[in-house]
Image (cartoon, rainbow, N blue to C red; front, side, top):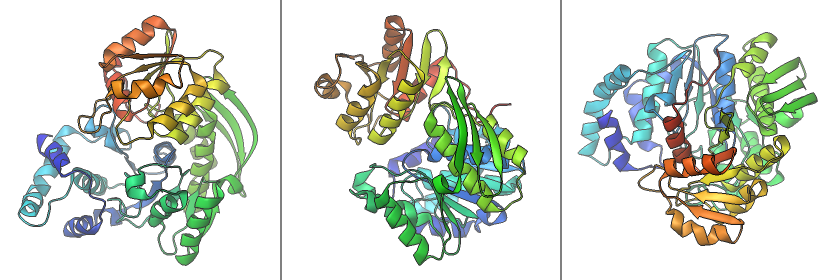
Length: 421
């Protein structure tokens, strides 16, 4: 594993040219199975997971997501199992010569490019029928955007990574819409006019059927609970009774987007497979209840839009306010995040996420937080911050970064499996 982590020193290269060469060198392994390609600002991981959980009931299915919370292996799942350490080592030996040759020329493949190609190859070697592929960053120039899926999916769009994706929703939508392929249908869960216009324009230019999942599906009834949601969802061809174990009304929207994409795939997936697959879906670190007494929820929301959605979900389900344990990266919109997450709590403990290069010093966040929250504390060590919160309250919400949620998940020994048996 040491060799692949050394590649992180290359950083993120928002450029597809080398990935295309790398992928061609290994003969486009992803061409041997059918794929769904998913991007968006919020919900892309959940939708990738839901689609995987349905497809795995129909055929051997891979799931590629990022980043991982606890172990690298979480990024690459096939059917019931994560990729093994031995297989990771095997693929790294396979790529070693190509990588080292790149060191002597313009550049070698990055950590994410190698991980992406590894997932493609792993799925091929294990004779996958399908793969659910989540975009890492943006879409247009993301390493995953060398594939030709049977359907592209774009979840909700909000302000994120504005240094790379643009400073307006239209610009960000343009980057996300870069995964739309000629003559391949695209499903979106987006509802705002500005990004919708951009996405629709790209789809028209590429002769891609454009489906808005909130129009394609109708919720005819629902019951929101603290352990999930029961919903009745109607499409032009079917009516589903969904028992989601994922918490929050926003997960119902993600389920609607997933259902639309699965139907548009036209793979003759049965109604009972959709219902069972969505019921089986489990997404660690996303509105994830990991302890009951005290009640502890982990959620990796890290942008203002996600914080707003999370706050609403907490208010909709619980009557009590949680203590927040928050650690953030330096490249986020901290003030807007705090404004939105404060809608569900007035007490925050600031701490440090486990990301050496981009972690934000919690002491620098304190003056900002004090303008918004009634009670602000700083505990730099994330485990000590978590322990303090559980001593002060019987309701704790850990959020702000996947890199903080990962630390707490590891400490609690949480299962990272993306499905329920």
